[in-house]
Image: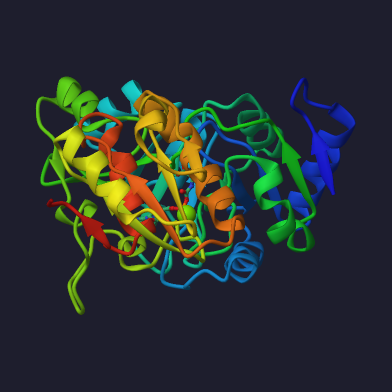
Length: 340
Ligand code: TXA
Ligand code: MG
């Protein structure tokens, strides 16, 4: 079942959504980053259903979504000055902070960690559901584990419909990539997953920022990670993908053209459409904001073409580019062409 709230929130349906969440059921809802598949964060059994619905590894903790600062404070046991500064600047918004958890958060939600990931979405539908429920909502991205995250209901309806009470359609997600995940380590904000709030934004605010080395690199066997999600395969279509990440634009386009054949498609910048010689060209737009907004839907569309290979054009790793490349490197399972 789908509720269409693109234009406005339907109050009768809102009542049903809240009731379902109180009963421990799952709901797919929009946020400004990607769609979430949510459950009452205080209900351990309901949270377990999320893991089942997604086929999610049980060691990968969920993000707890709150609608206000009071709710946030209730979920955590302490907030340092740096953490307070980050919260005040970036919440509500595409920003998740890892904090020491309080006892109200069940261990199943945090995969037995003593920390909890907290996010306050700015999306009106998400905010309204959480505040009406009066409790936080635990929610990972709405997709079967390993697949590209859902940024439009059309993309995820088939894969999730029979696993949830309802999917709420709030239109295309504004940002299109998941939130920036940050943990303050020894006073230094450390980015564990890049997103809409950039490293530059954090440095401008606090004066210092660290970027976890695994953001653009593979996690080696038995290597310790700050965030369990880093270890797992993500954002991957069924079709094999390759990322062409060459700084010189002419060299990059030449390389892409060399790989082309009839059973290959390309996801590239609109401005390069005429220079990439294929019928199977999927445009990711021109700005990094366009790429961020479109990429997950494009990966799903490319997959549906059923070809042999998806070639993806790399972007510079500045600003939002770091988040895009973090996802694309994993989409391609580290299959990256970076030299001529
Ligand atoms: O934008 C988003 O963040 C979306 C929307 C729905 O809010 N949610 C999302 O959730 O992307 P998910 O589950 O797909 O990603 C959560 C990430 C995972 O990489 C997980 O490992 C990490 O956050 N995480 C959660 N709790 C953590 C913790 N206590 N310590 C370190 N990392 C944590
Ligand atoms: Mg996810």
